[in-house]
Length: 174
Image 1 (cartoon, one colour):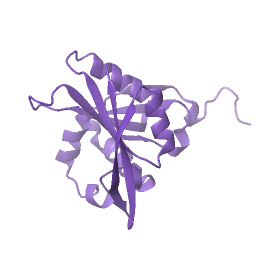
Image 2 (cartoon, helix red, strand yellow; image 1 turned 180 degrees about the vertical axis):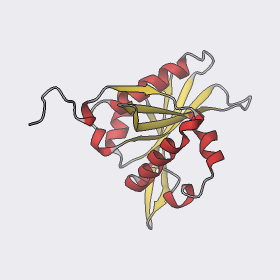
Image 3 (tube, rainbow, N blue to C red; image 1 turned 60 degrees about the vertical axis):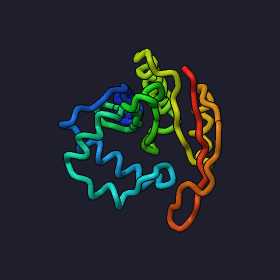
């Protein structure tokens, strides 16, 4: 008999945080899973990222935030602010992913809120940019709900398994 007080993994407490570079393998595992399960959601591929060194993963982890359930990463997204003088007024969001079994629980929304608040708190950022494949309807709806506007479309921007995909360019002014 299963105790009714025991929580299923998907019902555990969720938090948003960064991981330090010592946890690079958790990041790598989740990122590679994302590239396999959602290949049209990323401009990179599993075949190219499986070859990356430990040093590259450690360097990249600083640009990512993670949704953790019971201490295990179940979602991630990245964002960066350019250090170029003419571009340091905006941030780019990229690489949003939530494991399939944890979707439709508000995790992506909470990660977006966390990232937007962190970017806003920097004070000198006026907008956030992102791109999303046009067929990723749930993602497009989430971004629009958060205040992002479609400002353009790139035709045949990604090519995955011989098929082309268009991307929307979206922006959000803080």
